[in-house]
Image (cartoon, rainbow, N blue to C red; front, side, top):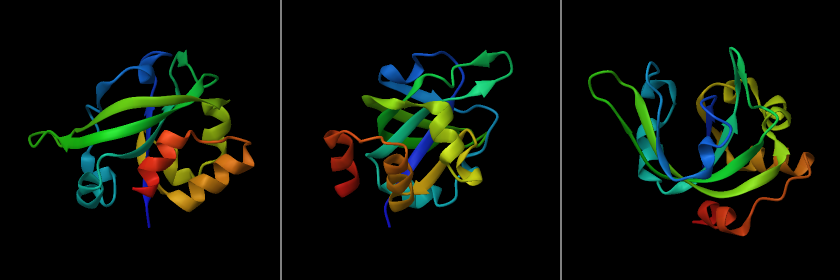
Length: 138
């Protein structure tokens, strides 16, 4: 079954609008089950969420549909890195999407099965862009 990566940030409100390397220093790649299988599936569909963290709150910003081009980790620290490029901004806010996600998908990064995310997006009235759906169809 296809999975979609969900990546969170609180760095800045426009973080996901440009192609970039998204590092997660201080976290471990092993926190993402199936890391090895997922790396082989790149490029793959992703979602970029703006999260509330400490004094920063960008959760009322719309989430971004992403292409996850590659995944690697620092062999010394285990910190994961994701190379992403934006596909399109959603109409739904990050806070609405995050509230609808299962608890295991509310961390800084996770993978969710495509049918479950599709149902959540449909319930929220969100229609994914065709270019992003093509990544899922493979």
